[in-house]
Amino acid sequence: MPKTRETMIAHLQGREKLLEYIGFPRQQAEWITLVCLHSGLFTRDQLAFYLQGANRFYVRRCVKALLDCRVSSRPFADERVIDGRLVCRIFGKQIYEVLEIPHVRHRREASLEVIRR
Image (cartoon, rainbow, N blue to C red; front, side, top):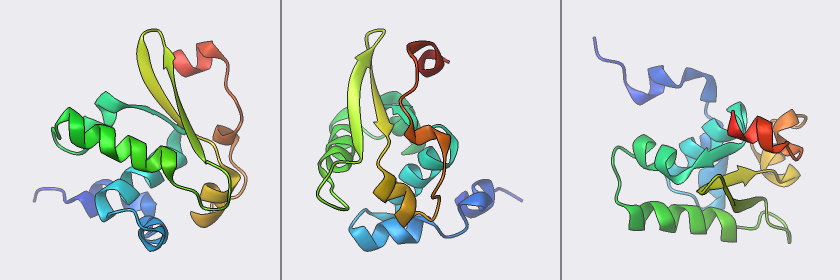
């Protein structure tokens, strides 16, 4: 029996629906939730792979929507170049609170060595 997205990512436990309420489409909400539950960091290539080969323009729009979104008056994500690659980091306390993940170490600034791993 092939695995569906729901069985592959069972630990999301419906948290992505909390981001749909903010205005993110289901697939983007799932991705943001998955990133927040794991490392808080991702590259555009990883997002494109998750979106099953989405073109770079769609991926760019997804990242821009994330960077421009405000849960409160402050941004909750940023993007910077590390080793020649754009790395996006989700750090805002408010987004983790929306996802009901209040105390997670991924919100703190990580060293360059940790980000590279």
